[in-house]
Length: 169
Image 1 (cartoon, one colour):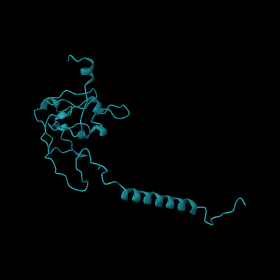
Image 2: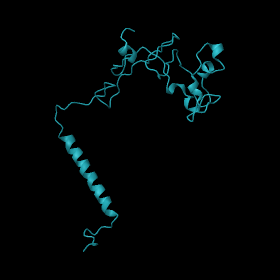
Image 3: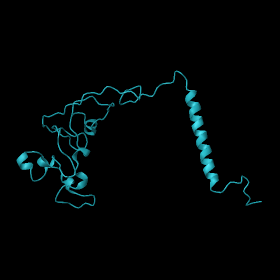
Image 4: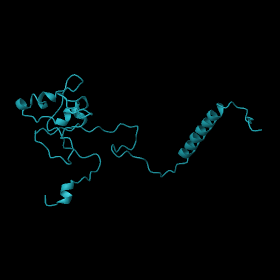
């Protein structure tokens, strides 16, 4: 008959039973695969850390010193945020205090000689120009980083488009 329930389970119990059985099949197949892995199988090594044993503590490299020559660095692409050309150690950056604005706000740039923050930092997401820095641009270190002399963690093959187009530069 059409409406007859052959397995005598409640209609809500069938999907639950199916999910439990399929989960068991997946777990068992994973366990079988792990036991049958060949001896010479390559180990997965994290590229960034280079640590072959993921549970061991790798040696911690020293914290690199920032470049503190206060020289502006050329940007690599048009919308790149400028790098911070000085140390920001012990700068307070909280909801109530932003030490970067002590020098880079409109009111203090003349006395400090620091460049004023971009006008884009005063525009909110709706395009309204505000009198003060918009909340989404308040935390400088989200986009801006200090410049350091360190070896890159991953290979970098970036080339400036201007140099590719005009190699004489």
